[in-house]
Length: 325
Ligand code: ADP
Ligand code: MG
Image (cartoon, rainbow, N blue to C red; front, side):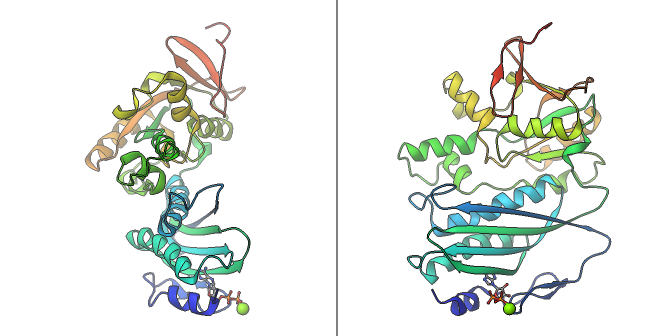
């Protein structure tokens, strides 16, 4: 691999943000911060054969997918994307041209959000590993923390859950039709940055992205906010083409498989009405799936299914019937 030519090939000709004082080409990037905004920083890594396989993903897909996972974190913080940094480790079996294809897949998504590539690192290793770090900005009064859920809030999710997991199942069955809706949701998920602008007028939203599965994200919110929650199984949105699935499999897809990169959160009941109106205009589905409870001595997520209330742990397992219910 010729690092010099690789960097030459990916170096942007110009930067979209005037805040980039120095981009690629020196020992470090220089940014002139916007003092009225706070900086949000997130990072995510994808490792070949653990997080993706080149059997069903192109090099462009790999690049797209790792940046999408990062952008989902920026969306979950309520921030606007600005810049990204890319660290690639690969064996010499991966050509320069293939590395450029990874960067092109990323660029496609980055350009749609006017993001600037401002640096990175390129190293050799046995396995293909791609790490992206993203930088975004947020108005300090509009950041969407996990720790701000309040008793009486409604719990909501965007879109449908389990679509990416179902797409992965189709891929494992040897269905490589990349135009299939679910396979697309797995390989090229669209981060929910559209939700950020659409809900910018709302003061308080507690938010998390569904990267590790709904149960896990709900438990993170409950712990961070020190509240309990009650979710209604029947209210969890399922894509019509997935309703035929067996109970156990559907449960696993909706509760434990992540990577849908939808958003889950809580807000006041009144604000949810406003969010749903705004989001309907923007074509974003927002469903109420439960509520935040009053008791907060032991943060717990409960799920109500067929009239039975049980505890939902972060792995998606439902523990028996609850005492006194
Ligand atoms: P240094 O040796 O000073 O760390 P490098 O030679 O590794 O710098 O990189 C030269 C320039 O290219 C730097 O600006 C660095 O940020 C950038 N760069 C290196 N690899 C990548 C990459 N994979 N993606 C984006 N920028 C990169
Ligand atoms: Mg240097």
